[in-house]
Image 1 (tube, protein in one colour):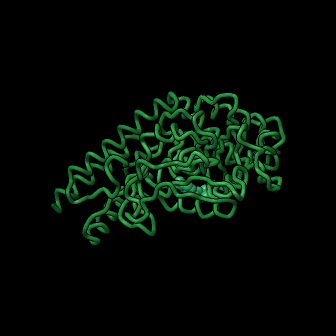
Image 2: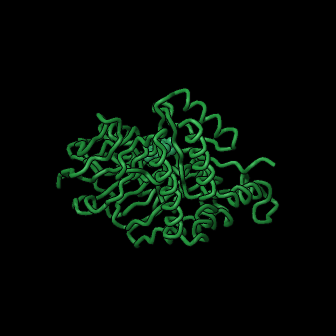
Image 3: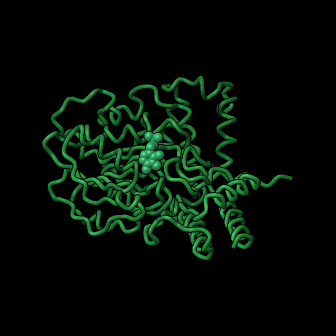
Length: 361
Ligand SMILES: *Cc1c(COP(=O)(O)O)cnc(C)c1O
């Protein structure tokens, strides 16, 4: 018998097996209605219930206060790179940005179309291998934009206190670590996340907004770009990505049934500590991120010898471990340890690493 497949892809990525099964069933026969979820009108009671449950699960799992609204929007996280400044930043105003990965750099580029960007910290010169510390965030900034987890280079902010103390609204791209660890989500004024990494299927974006922040820019906004219109319409301003929202709802239910964010965080900590402790024991593998900034979601590592890298990739493939290859411009390895990855998958990977190191070392 072939061993189980473990999918370490960075996104779209692994989801709970029960979610795949329920989603597949809903494509054939949604809630015993005889209809597929794919042919269901988005204004039907049946779909309205899906949207309502998805929104209320996000509020429950993140313990959001009444000022924070939840939206499921189109266009992926990359659309938020410009929708955020469009809604929050006037042309003559400043926003503070951190430049900690390719995604953060893209967000900066888009924000510059709408106002002034002050880059308050960057690790670009060191191939984004660490996170800048002791940043000075101007009090005049309309907001501070951070990327909480840097999917490509494998770093993650662990001490959020300096951000909370900056005294300006915080906007966070949480695409690759949303709902993976306990945070005081109410301290963030705007959170966005492409769903395909830790929340569901590709095609939808989870956005959480403190509504008090809105309505303060001078520019005219296209209807679809104005967050207020989406809030007023319960995230149903136009046809939402029905199936993608449904998959998010199932994944959020699964997370609640696991015990919520605090419970999954414990398992995520175990997975990350197993992987990194293995990495540090085996000189043949080298972690690429500064130890204190290592991501618990995307672990990046390399070998000195490109032939050995190829060999190890082939061994992973033979053993049904998929998606271990590093980002196309970075190389090496990246193991993504999202919520749905069981500890067992990391055990299989680390056993292969140990075995390989013993044979080659
Ligand atoms: C994947 C990713 C994005 C881009 O997401 P899209 O939905 O493809 O636009 C943005 N930010 C981070 C941190 C990501 O990991």
